[in-house]
Figure 1 (cartoon, rainbow, N blue to C red):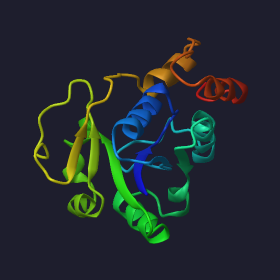
Figure 2: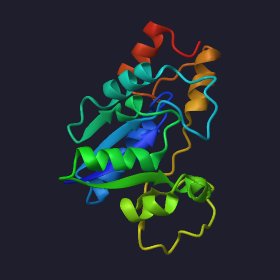
Figure 3: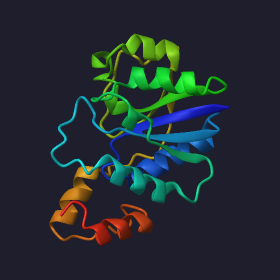
Figure 4: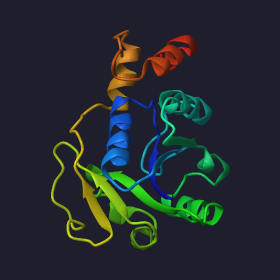
Length: 190
């Protein structure tokens, strides 16, 4: 089976993530999309980061109605911060029967050469890259291991959602209803 790995903090998961995942599943050869919830991104500060188990729970709720989507807490059991290459190696060792592709937003390609062992990632899985608003040309445009996928251009950010919650502004339609309900019940991001 060919599986797309969608890494993220998902702080919180939102409709933009789900639309991208669905587009990848519907328009490519990817048979499943696995959401890899990252406990700590080496490039991000974690001051507003909800606990990893809560973010994992939000992801599970958001994707529960799609059998092609799966949430993974694999990085919770690895040293922090999480490095994608280490997770890719562990996933491939655990699931040798599958082929994996790393899903990435086009806006992340500029930083990709700063990732630990990025050349090995290209060799190991390659990239399925979705377009993002205001993305610039990059050195990977013609790389054989990089496949560009046309996707809806959505500019929904988790930061906007967290700020809205802090300011008492509705997040209806930005996140699935089940995610919104849990955020309200647990008073996340207030």
